[in-house]
Image (cartoon, rainbow, N blue to C red; front, side, top):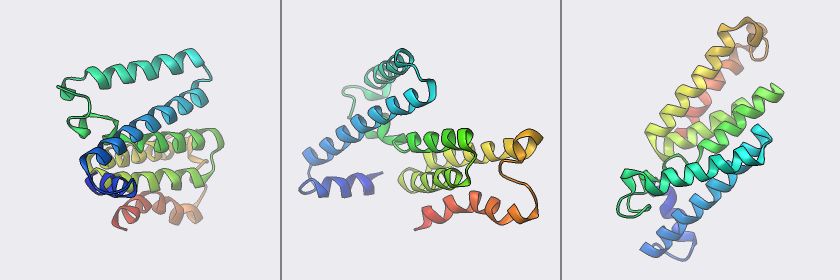
Length: 168
């Protein structure tokens, strides 16, 4: 996490406490905006989306790890999981369209998360594996990612791609 935030702060005019704080604030603002867009796309309800956003902000503001201030420990904020929105959007897009490009996009996000914060990336990697496993185990969903032996290389890529992205 410090590497990405440090580079972003450097782009704001130099590495300083103020620029790091501003970077973290902007990441949080963008995260909640993207979270709202994802919820609107998923639920198609303004009320549920706004309620979820307000609940998420309340949890961040009054979480016991955020004492004495929300951004005292950046790992206690959404900065820890700032890429999960893109992962969930890719999985949701795959659920709705069944296009393999969305699984590769989810894998790329997982690789970036592994680089950003290993534990969050590992959790998303396990979620991706569980999603793929559900497809393999369920005959009605298997046809969306595996139709025969010709699909083995792309299926191996779904799992190997996140590791390759993390190593870049």
